Amino acid sequence: MIVFVKIVAEELHGAILSGFCCYVLIDVGMKPLPPSSACVTYLGMESIVLEWTRPYSDGDAPLLHYVLEKRDSGKSAWERLTELPPDVTECELDNMATNKVYYMRVRAANRFGLSDPRDLDQPIKIKGDKRGDSNIE
Image 1 (cartoon, rainbow, N blue to C red):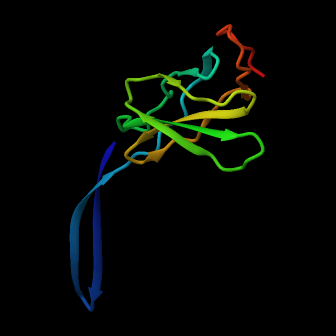
Image 2: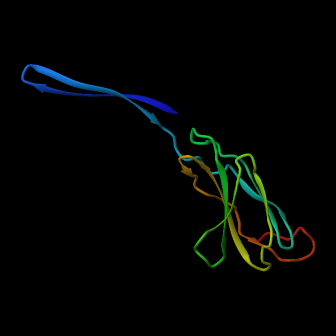
Image 3: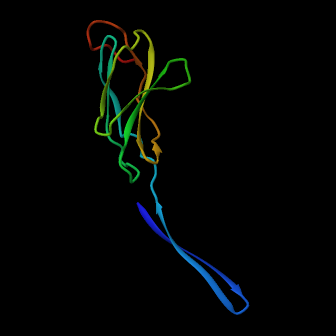
């Protein structure tokens, strides 16, 4: 949203009033809300597919991309995995280690910044069995 603001400065010198006036254009916006939902739609031997939905609000600026992040169980730092265009709401992540627990999240970005993260409801453990429908733990 763009706002026009009129700024007026006046100074009184005895009986004479002098002033200054200008107009300023301010671009008012904010970072987007987090994606509305995020879930695992496929859990394979060494890969997962994550899917998410667009945020309820883009912060009055077009989305630029999504950011996928993961955190290994027992660690505190999040690792940025990839950036995806704003029209993509699904991603397959390959080469995931078996018998390891991961926490996953997705963020939306516009020119005002990154949204808060949308975390998956539960951690993911790839069991490495050959069924392609491994359980999520």
